[in-house]
Image (tube, rainbow, N blue to C red; front, side, top):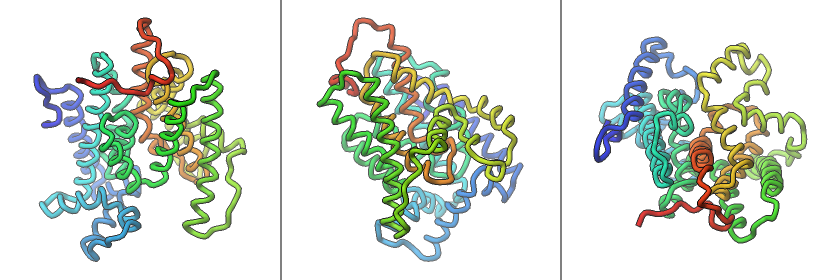
Length: 358
C-alpha cells in the first residue's frame, strides 16, 4: 500500500494488486495446505531448501555459492524469517514487491514519453501472468525487475547493479543482456541501410550464437563433450516462434505436459500477456518508424540469444520470457500510441535514448 501511494492519490493498479495478491495467496494456502510448495513449480521446494541450508551450514563466501544458492533472494527471505515471516510467504512477498516496482518503472517510462497511463496499459508490462507468478514463491519477478531496469532504466549505476544482480540470479540471462547491449552500441555508430533486413540477420545470428554458447558453457563448466547445438533444426526454430505466440507447450509431448492442449490454450486466453506482448512488440519493431528503434533491437537480440541458449534444453515455458516482457510491452505501447506523432522523425543514431527531466 505504501508503494501504491504517490504524491496526490493512491494508484489503482497497485491497490488492485495488493488485494488480488492477498486473496490469491490465502486461497492457495487453503486449497493446497502444506502441498502449496509444489503448486505450479517444484522450484519453490528448492528455494525453501536453500533457506534451510543457510540455517544449518551458514554462508559460503564464494561467487559460485552466491549464484548457485541464490543469495540475492534467499538472504532477504532468511532475514524476514528471523522476524517471524514464513519463508514461503516471504518469497511471495518479495515477488509482489518486485512486481510493484516493475509497474512503477514502466509507468514512469511511459509518462516521460507523454503517455497518460491507463489501467489497461498494465496488461502489456505487469499483467495477469506477472500477478499470478507473484503469488508463487519463486525468483522470476526479481529477475524481471533487474532485466527491465537494464533495458529502460535511466541511471547507469543502477543499470550496472541490475546486470550484476541478474548475473547472480541467472548468469546466462546476464550474458544475453550483454550481447544485446553490444549490438545496440554498434548500431549507434553504424547505421544499416536496410534496417529490417539487418534485424532479421541479427536475430538469426543471436539465436545461433546462443546455441553455440550453451554448448561451450556446458563444455567449460561440466567438461561434457563439445556437441554441435540444435540451431539449424526445424524443432529449434519452432520453439523460437512458439515463444512469440505463447504456445510453448505445443513443442512438448504428453509426457511433459499433462494438461490437454485445449485447456492450455484457454489458459493462454486468460494470460493474454503471454502472446499479446511479443506480438505487439514484433509489430512495432518492423512496422513503425518511431523512437527507441535501437532499444527494441537490443531487447529482441537479447531475447533471441537467450532463446538460443534455452532451446538446447528441455525447458520451454512462459516463465523464461518474463525478463523481456515488460520492456517489450512498454516499447510496443510507445510504438503504437506515439506512431501518429508526425512531428518527430527520428534518426537511428538518436533512438534508444530516454529523454531526461531537467
